[in-house]
Length: 141
Image (cartoon, rainbow, N blue to C red; front, side):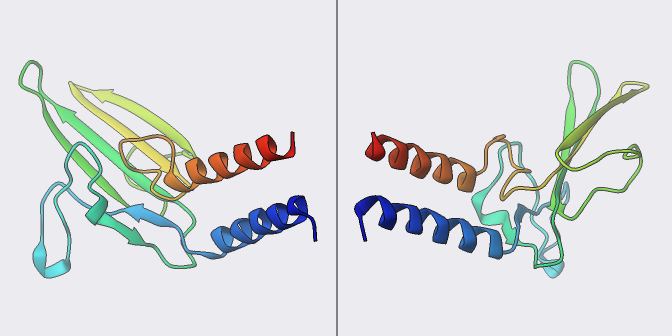
C-alpha cells in the first residue's frame, strides 16, 4: 500500500472513531452543588467540567445572564442537551439568541460539536481534524 493510501486510511479511521464517540459538553451551573456533582461555572470553560453526554445526546447548550449596569452580575450555565427554557423558542442546533428585558441580558446557545459550549468557538476535535487534513494535503503535493 502506498504512503498516500496509508494516510487516507488513517484519516478515515480517525473520522469514524470520532463520529462513534459520544458528544462531550461542559457542564456547570451558577451555583455549585457537590452532592449532585454540579460545579460552579466561571467565564472561561474549565476543562475539569467537560463531560461525556452519552450516545443519545447530540447537542450542548450554554446560557449567559447579565444583570445590572456598571456593576454587572453574570451567571453562566453549560450542559448536555438542547436548552428548552424561557426564550428558546425556535432555537436550532448551532444557533444563539439574545434577549434584553428590562436590563436583564440573556444569551442562549445550542451547538453540536465536542466542547462547543465553552468560551472558545472552535472545538478541539475540529482543530485536530483540520491540522490532519492540512498535513495530508501538504504531503500529497
